[in-house]
Length: 173
Image 1 (tube, rainbow, N blue to C red):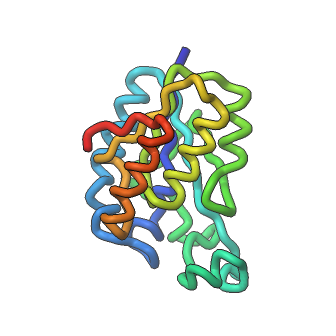
Image 2: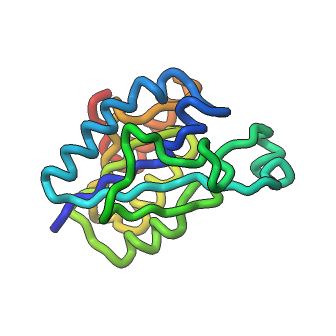
């Protein structure tokens, strides 16, 4: 049985674009190394992509986070080039914090373990960790603290604490 790496929203707008922050840039090499390790081991990698449209500021999320980002087909929407998706990687386009496509995929495909990395720890990483635990409650779900980031370090640490409380294995803290 294969292991799964889920790369959450490591897109240009979250790294160097409209919602970019220094810690997101800093974790890039660690994420790239983890992807390389999973590829070398013949394990599976999937990516989630936060995806919005030009009416983003009129949406519920846009009214609460009024910063246009990850508009489909823009440079900011694309996965960072230092960690590009490659065939046969699967990409889940999502319009909210958690990916329903990822959840459905996990319900149908058992894994030895599910590891998450990416951004933003206290929003999208934690949302997808909940979905992973829900889809595969008997599968170890792992988050490498050196491969996730938030623009607020306090919330990053709190999110890691909360994930640990619902039995996500938080490593390298």
